[in-house]
Amino acid sequence: MREFWIEIESSMTNELKKELLRASEDLCDVIVLSEADIHLRKSCTNLIASPVDGDIQIIGEEMINQIEILKKQQRTLCLKLLVKDRDDEAKAVKAAESGVDYIIVICPNWKIIPLENLIAKTNKKTKLLAEVVDAKEAKIAVEILELGVDGVVLKTDNPKEIEATARVLKSIVSLPEIEDENQKIELTTVKILNSKQLSMGLRVCIDTCDIMTQGEGMLIGCQSSGLFLIQAEVEKNPHVEPRPFRVNAGPVSLYILDSDNKTRYLSELKAGDEVLAVNRKGDFRKVVIGRLKIERRPLTLIEAEMDGYRMKTIVQNAETVRFVTKDGSISVNELNKNDEVLAFRQLGGRHFGVLVQEESVTER
Image (cartoon, rainbow, N blue to C red; front, side, top):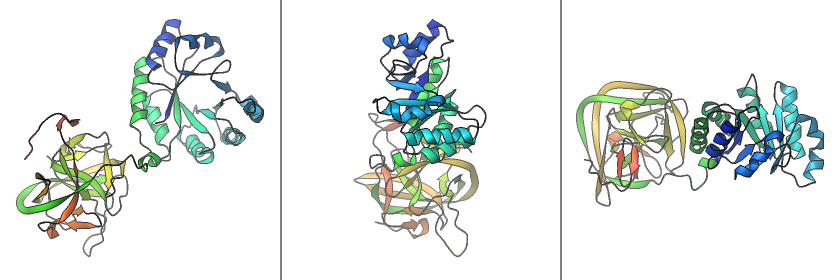
């Protein structure tokens, strides 16, 4: 999880300062205090960053040339830097190469481009923190260039904004974190029992703002406790071009696993929402929906079984709809009894999409 710092401004009232400290206690890693407020460290358990008497020493750009000397004194250093142009970016890079532990970047005008430049130039040399004013800015900062900054420094007078920003930071999963072996969805094989041609119905194509690859798609099904991995339209064929941004998901009433580990109905999705793209290894990532394409099409019911549990999904009757297997994929029109496809089985019920493992629910 990214580091979460809070800056207490000296101009605030004493009562507001204490209220912010109380709200920060269990949510934040570091409190930034001015020299005038360093006495407040007695009333909090967090690490303190300050120009004096802090666990982390805050320095200004005038001390960049002294970083190597200060590091010899076994100090943890944090450079606070206003970045207005490329010259300021160069100062941050110099500080990173000199061994400063943290850099707090303040971007008064342009925000995205300076952070992109600094993430690229200082990655793994220092911890880059972006000053933000709310949870929305925090989310942008930690997602820039897919790597994001290493943390944020929130400047606010609203205790609720502290809670909101903490939730955002906790929910962000970057590409390196996804590649961690512990960050996987456990998929299993299920055996196909039968398929049945149905009449027409409204089906949803999910067009994303990303490109998916072979073996990657989305978890979708009739039951929240059993979701099939439906591959994106990545395969070449003689009749239509691949659409690797698209998953032909199924009828509007089906469930999909979204980016918060909740299930949602396909009918609820809209442009700008996030859902999970999952591959056959169980690796997952968040993708943004660009649009939903809903059309009336002929449908097929697919039923499968695992350890006595039956699970179903309905898909469009089209060759481009493919179920992911351990080593490939199978078109819905080629599925036969006892074929094995990948699915996600999760015990329990769902209440407004939230998993309740203790709940016993029958879904048919």
